[in-house]
Every structure is written in C-alpha cells, then in structure tokens.
Image (cartoon, rainbow over all chains, first blue to last red; front, side, top):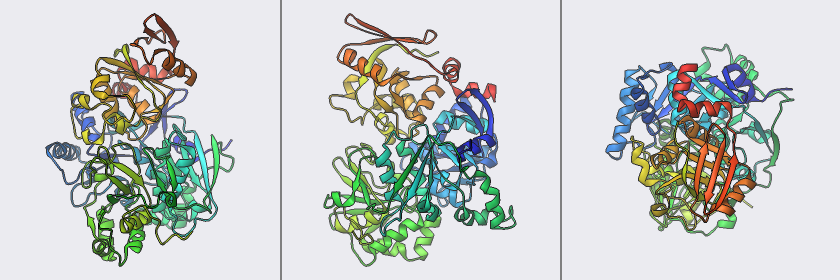
Length: 428
Length: 174
C-alpha cells in the first residue's frame, strides 16, 4: 500500500514509537512566539533544564501583542528576548522586523517540503502549504521540542480533499476553506491530516495555499498539506538556490514527498467549487457558514483585514481593488494590519496603503492583535466585526462581540457598504 | 500522580473551545495560578454561571470535541488552577487532549451513549466522581445512584500520567 505525504515525512523523521499508535519524530524547526513560549522557558529554568536542542532550528518572533501594550506583555517580550540572547538564537524577530508568525516564517524561507515543524500556536498547520508536516502544539510539547528537538504524534491518518471544478471570479481560497469546514464540521478532521489536492489547488499560488491550510485546524485537523510542486519551488528558490543546481533539480528532490497514487486515505472527499459563492460565517463556530448573499445587509461596526489567514500581499491587492476610489461607510471603522513588514513595504510601494487610507482605513503595524482580542481593534460588547481572520468563537475579538469570517474582497465590500456585502469582483 | 476525583461539573454542549475555557486576553499571565478566576468565563451555555458553578468541582463531564480551537495550554492550566485534573467526554480536540496528558492530567474518552446516560442520570444531581487509575474505573455517585464506568488509557498516556507529564518522560527517554 502506498503512502500519504504525512506518512512519508513521519518515516523520514521517526526516532521512537513508545506505543503502537505513537510516533516520536525529529523536528526540523521549532517556532516560538511570546504568548506560549515564556511559560516553557520559565518551566525549563525551574526544572534546571534551560537548554535548547539546536539554536539554528529555533525561530522566534514577538507577534501577538506588538508593540507591548502593558507591563505583562512587555514582560513576555523580555523573557523571550533574554532567552534568545542567552542561547544564541539568531533568527529572532522583534519590533521593526516582526510580523504574524505564519506569514513571516514562510517569507523567510524557514519551511521546506518534507520538514517537520511545531509551534505553540494552533495555526501552525499553515506551513503544510509547503508540503511540510506542521502542527500546533501546547506549551509542554513546545518545551520538549525546544529541549530535545522531538515531538510525539499519533499515526497521521489523512483525509484527502480534492478541490475540483473551476473557482469562479471573485471567489477565493478563503471561501473554499470556509465551505470545506462548513461541509465536514469543526470536528470533521480531528486527529487527521488534511491533504488538499485537485486542479484548483494546483493552480493556487503559495499565499492561497497558506490560507487553505491555515484553517485546517478549524475542522480539527492536525495539519493541512499541499503536495510540493513547481509553484512551491519557485516561491522557495531564493532560499534554496545554493543547494540545488536548478529549480528542476529541487523539484525532483521534493517529489520524494508526493503522495503515492495508491496511498491509503482515511477518507477522500471531492469538493467541487464551480458553483461556490463568497462565504461568511454566522454564529460562534467556523462551520456555521452560508453564502454572503444570505447575510447581505447585516450591519457591522468594524471591518478587520489582518491575521495569519488573510493579510499577505495578494490579500491586500484584492481588497485594494475593491476599495479603489471608494470611501468606507460612515457607520464603520476599518482596520488593516499587514501581516509582515515586507507585506507592508510592498503595499506602500504598490500604492495599496494609500488606497486603504484614502478609503478611510486605519493601518496598523503587523501584529496578531485584534484577531484574538488582544489589542489593536478589540470589540465592545454587542459589536459586530467582519474579519478576514479564522475564528468566530464567542468573545474571540472581545467579550460580547460577534465575528463574521470573510475573504479580503468581502471585507472590503462590507467596509464600503457598512453591511455585509458581496464584492463587485463576484458576479452571480 | 494528580487527583482525579471529587465533585462533578456537567457541561452539556459539544465543541467547547479553548477561547471559552480561557479567553485570550488572559494569556498575558506568566503564572498559571493567575488564570484561576477566569476559567470558562466566555462559555456560551444556557444556565451556566462560572461565578457560582465552578467552585469545589474537580471533574468535568462534557460532550464531543471539548478543547477545540487554540493550542493554548492555558486551558488545562486554568482547569488545574481550579483543582480540575480530569475531563470526561465523547472525544477531544487533538492539541487539548495532548496538553492534558502532557501535564499529567487526563482527558478520558467514553462512548457517546455512555456519556448520554451519565448526563441523563447525574447531570441534575450533586454528583461525586471517584477515579481509580490503576483499575481503570470511574465511579459516579449521587443520591443513591451509583455507576462504575470502565475506561482505558493507552500505554503512552498512562506513562505520562504516572510520570507527571511529558517533559520528564521525554528528557529521560529521547
């Protein structure tokens, strides 16, 4: 029987099987941020185990609350900074170079096909877009990852989701993943890896694939994975050009991680998107989804374009296309938080920031901030936000607030209308 | 080994996420004990009031997919800070479940019909839970009602519970 991508990666990295269904795998990278890492650092110190397995494989960013908003968040940053210095961790991204981890680290070329990655952050599944096994973990798993460079996982059973058909104009990767989650439910992929495949995925750029994989966790998935291909190689080429003679050679090397044609899947789902419309969530679970047209006219107080799901340059370009020459509604406040400094800079150079500001958006520095109700756009009780983020949980963006998850195009159109609205990029 | 016995708290809803268990705004705390007052603060559940319903409880019984969402280990920590080391449910989100055992706590999975019977028999009563990890049994008792429910842990999960968590186990074995 053939193997899935995750099975092949596990076979390459397994260092132990302490139980029949438990695989301890070697880690190629351990990512850290200031929310979940400081408790691991403090615990390691208390256990007299203040060591790191390999400073070159540990990548660190302050992103969730940046700049620090109070003494507590300042202390989290301080603990992380001192620890990184103490252990000679070179890849540390502080104010000025920091951005949302799952946008920043891919941009730096830190994820490669076949890699194993953990982070104390559930949206680590994003990095599977590169043909890697990347999983969110808690602080204890992170702590052991830092100390020993290993992590334990159950056997990676895989659901293959073939995205078939033709994606209509004005319908984006965000709408695809919302429709997938709506179909399989928030518990639909628990303990499973989701392999995203099919011609629609093959045609997606890396940023769209990251949006897709980013929300695998909202269906309970351990990781979302896309098979590495020429698009993956082209994205990574600046970082791997010294290692391979040519992109073709890199592609040949990465083909080791393609799933076998007779791979054994737990489940295979064909998900046709030819008739898909822009989607929006209602309620407090990411599987509560419906077409934007069915929610049209719902008033919102705030529009937020940001997060590891949808604040990369392609997202900003799409939103700016909708906003060009328009003003946001008087009844709405709108916030753009570009995911990284590189995205911010590029958006400046392309004139996108001006478009956002002329439309009436507030533009913040890169940070996770409002997505999880930490800073830079927290909702008041009873307020409603259309957001390009990933979670509409009760209280997520502020106690008593309601979040409607949408694509950047829908977010921009909603800012202009003041109510949930389809963008003109989509025609029924 | 931690204690897995005491008064039961029934939370009758699937998909209770970690933002509901401990909202993100409290993740700026470095101390685990500081999380104690905020447990289940944002839980969306009719009739549940965290201010009065959590005190004195030691075990949670709930439905499917408890702990979905964020990876925050602050969720088990907030439970532990309130003396709750055992959650019993139909199934758990992967990261939450692993976090529980990584802390030497337990997330015990029981069949849906067993959970349903526990809810119908005990949810409205003052229920006490007595857990025997070695025997693999959880005894539910209330006002004359008593049920002994067997459960199984994988060898690995049992090792983590015995070792008191994953850090010591991993450092000794890998």
